[in-house]
Length: 259
DNA sequence: ATGCCTCCCCGAGGGAGA
Image (tube, rainbow, N blue to C red; front, top):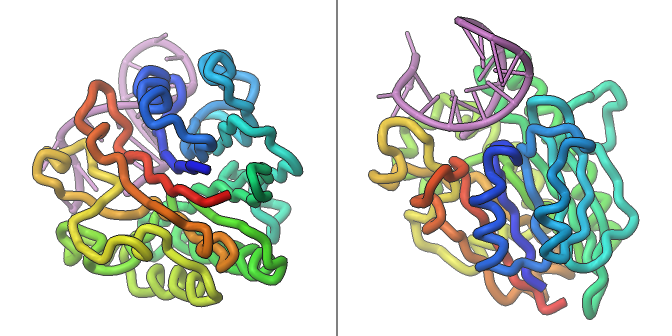
């Protein structure tokens, strides 16, 4: 089962780039972030034509997550538990059944800049809620994963210029600590389970020729429960599509599970 | 980068992103 995560930076602006990539990469599941669309405006036909089932959790203008899946999506839940007053659309989960059932959680973790400030406080509080959901997933002993745009640079080797992010909400020590506390519950960073080398990124700023200089950061991640990690056979970043017409500033990251 | 793009809102120019 090939499962991808992709922050598309606006579904309306990304129809061509996204459908071109889907046609080539042929993921069974794609977890999308920053659809920037309400549910009713999501252009479902482009994906239904390709055999995908669709579940969205959108809002006007900002944020918004979705799941595309060639297999039926069951037990869909929208919104990260732990704060009923949180109006931001950043979390969706569902189960797909291939040869085995896999619980999928798609997430768009808050950026948090400027830090310190209320946006950074919201990011840290959201990560605490994420930790609670992660612990519950681990306790369930399911084949499960959390994937998406985490807006966290886990280690210095995950940035071309790590020093430039030390004061940024994506790279502050407190951000990395909060991320480690989640991973250290017993999850596996799928990319790092298979690739130790530096120089692999999932985001390049549109500005200042960041892509041309490979001035990137790795902030889009797959975290797997042990039951999912046992089934991991591949994890790659499709960075080449950053070079195309009207790209997102992120590129897809995907895993293959023997499930 | 205290922001050199690009997205969204709409129909100007500001907020947000990372």
